[in-house]
Structures are given as C-alpha cells and as structure tokens.
Image (cartoon, rainbow, N blue to C red; front, side, top):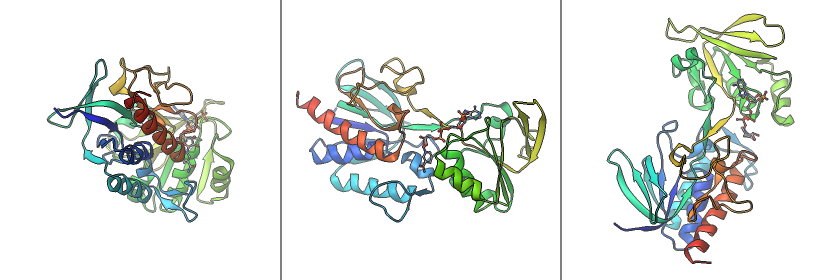
Amino acid sequence: MNTRKVIIIGSGPAGHTAAIYAARANMKPLMFEGMTRGGIPGGQLMITNDVENYPGFPEKITGPDLMKAFRDQSERQGCEIVTDDVNKVDLSAKPFRVWVGDDNVEHTASALIVATGAQAKWLNLESEQALKGRGVSACAVCDGAFFRNQDVVVVGGGDTAMEESMYLSGICKSVTLVHRRHEFRASQAMQDRVFANKKIRVIWDSAVEEVLDVKKGEVTGVRLKNLRTNEVSEVICTGLFVAIGHTPNTELFAGQLELHDNGYIKTKTGSTYTSVPGVFACGDVQDFTYRQAVTAAGTGCMAALDAERYLAGI
Ligand code: NDP
C-alpha cells in the first residue's frame, strides 16, 4: 500500500486550509470529505447563510460559496479529495491507518490531520427525535423553505439562534424564539437585529418540554415550561429549529487521542499537536473557545506546518 505523507480528515475551513498549505509544501495530501453529518461535505459553513466576518469579503459571502472557494483552491494546489466517510482509524502504530467508505478501504499515512469539526446539539426529547425531519430541524438554511408563511419556533440564546431566527423571519409568517434564561449569550450586534425584527418575538426563561404532535407525525406546536414559574403553555407552530450549540465530532478518536471532558481534542498550547505524535488537530474539533471560520482556517494552516516539520524531523 502506498503510504501517504499526510491524510486530512474533514473538509471545513480548517481541513481545506491545511490541504492548501500541505499541497504547497509538496506533501501531496489526501483529504476525506465525509457525508454523514448532514449529508453535505464542507462543514458548518455549508449550513450558514451569510458570512459577514470572514476577512477579504467586504460584501458578504454565503457559507456554501466560501466553502466552494476553499475547495477549489485545495484542488488547484494539488490536494486529492475523496468524498467518503472515514469509519475507523488506528493511531496505535505508524503508519496511521484509516478505513474509508462502504467498502472500508484501508489507507495509511505518516501524519494525520484531524479537522472533523463539530455538529449541532439536540434537546434530546423523545418527541424531538421522533419528529426530526418532519418539522424538527437544526438547520434553517437547509429546511427553512419548507416553512414558507408558517409559524416556527427557534430554541437557543447564542449567535446561531439569532442567525436562524433572522433567516427564518425572511421566509416564515412568525418566529418565536424560546430561551431558557432571561438574557441571550449572543453578540450584541446579533441581539440588536433580533430585537429590531418585528416578526420575531422572544419567550424568556422557558424550556421546550415536548414537541407536538408525535401521533400525527408532524409538528403542530411545542409545549413550554416557564422555568421560573413552572407555568406550562403551548405555542402553535409547524416547525421547530433547535439552535443550542455544538458537539465535537470526535467519536472516531475516543480512546486513541486525549480529549477534554467536553469531548474536544486536546492540543498542546500554541500548536496543533495532539497526544499522539504525528496526529494534528485543527478547527472546531479542538476549539470550544473561538469556533470561528477564520480561527479554524488559522489552525488548519498551523496543522499543515506542524505536520511538515514533524515529517522533516524538526
Ligand atoms: P452557544 O454555545 O454560543 O449557545 C448555545 C445556546 O443554546 C445558549 O444560549 C444556551 O443557553 C442554549 N442551550 C444550550 N443547551 C441548551 C438546552 N439543552 N436547552 C435549551 N437551551 C440550551 O452556541 P452557538 O451555536 O449559538 O454558537 C457557537 C459559536 O459560534 C459561538 O462562539 C458563536 O459566537 C459562533 N457563531 C457565530 C456566528 C456569526 O458570527 N455569524 C453565527 C453562529 C455562531 P445558555 O445561554 O443559558 O447557556
């Protein structure tokens, strides 16, 4: 088997920046862009509407357009990209082994760059799970169009919840934003936009207890509980968008790489070195502090440079 110098797992801003740098350093990288998470490679930007904070784009750019540019640049620089899921890795010996796709094809590499990102969290209510894809979603850009001129509920208090609410307000009749506290954690600019939007009303201090109606097989409303007064109420809606944060995609590496208690990969401060020499982690899979496309891209660059120096024995 032809052992690659470097394999990159993941195709968001971190993976592609690592690919561009690795290809330019003549490391002939092989990237696996997976399909399992949401069915589209490219990471979370693929489900982000307008990106206004990625430097270099004074006019906003859409997430998918930005990712297409990243991907085109990786390919142009010579990265080989395979669209398939990695099923298993073995980091216990060198070369590292990676099994990919339905046929579980084995690939080997001297260095591995992990850029598998993070994915949306769910409320984990039985009714939510039962109605996923039948009115319950974690991606307004993907599913919002199904709720044109309808009433929807968004849960969360961070930037994602603000962004989803704003996006949905452009499509839906009304958006009810439900948050468990009396204060958002979102940036002030995003909050201001939400407060100024007449189509969005906020329900504070409340949790979704149940999504209605599992028996009907479609969303007809949500049952809320006010966490201060215990009062229970119902909001009629046809869609529920859950926007409560993210979980790192680290299940492939559990027991092989050191993880933080919250599941994110531990990296040595100021570098992308993981607990296994030769394995580097970049982007949201190792970052629960900044979680921005631009920081992911920055650490992707670091991972490629770290891998290059590691392979050169420096
Ligand atoms: P955050 O972790 O920032 O926010 C999650 C929100 O969901 C919090 O308000 C939290 O409540 C709430 N929450 C968490 N768990 C539950 C639960 N079980 N039930 C009810 N509510 C819950 O995640 P985001 O995805 O919003 O943002 C992640 C990062 O991405 C942030 O750094 C953000 O700034 C960034 N981002 C930036 C964007 C942009 O600039 N365009 C767009 C989207 C995200 P509580 O506040 O009480 O903890």
